[in-house]
Image (cartoon, rainbow, N blue to C red):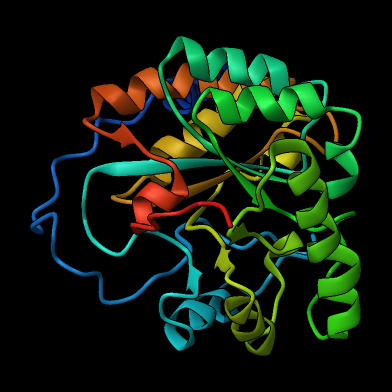
Amino acid sequence: MPRKTRWGLVLIVVAALIGWAIYAWLPPAMPKPGQIAASTPKARQYVRTPFLDDWDQADLAIMADHARLNPDLAWLEGPTHRRVVALTFDDGPSPYTPDLLDVLKKHHVKATFFWMGKHLEGREEVVRRALAEGHTLGNHTYDHPDISGTSEDFWWGEQISRTQDIYQRIIGKRPVLFRPPYGKIDDGEIKALGQHGLKTILWSVDTQDWNKNRWLFGSHYIERWIQTYIHQEAIILMHDGGGRRDQTVEAVDEVIPWLKAAGYEFVTVDELLGIKQAYQ
């Protein structure tokens, strides 16, 4: 190959890499104001982010069916088109939770935490702090099993009710919001939870931060995922426990100002859904 041709190919590759880096790093354009009136009901609820193969995720179509078949009991997002979002965090509390609470306090943002019973014990002060600072607390089972298709003695007695009792001991009340691990639950369980006074909360934007925390520049990619898939009344899934979560904390610190600049306000899930009492 002639030398000039080789150098030409090198320059093309370098230019392509620079172009990709600029595209990957610069934030997307601010989302335009919606054309639908804020009070207009949504025709359906569904997950905006793509399915990740081979990671034991809940089927996205089944999640959408849960909301369709169980109105007022199962939710993936808010019911209308207000320019608000709900940040939610699973699997804590953990050693990363105080730093996350600091970031939320700095930005005057309230969030919703779906915590595991086994992690509540021994971190009572963090639980009380989150409640005192205006965040909403929810139930995420005792130790994070897939509860779908299991017996009520297990999913209620050993997992959800057990965690409700721990909340009762720590904060004197029990959450009405529940999120199933992995998003996996069946319609019979959703209806039975409704009889216990609990709402099943899924999500419309999955940041997949549990995976991106392992990446170089993971916080950037968590932030970019939110910026790419944000929509009116989104319920955004992140994690403050279950492993390394420092890049989630960093991403939250970076994305909140961007979302505010895009005209979004932050609400807790109970506020988003108009649930007047977040606790029993």
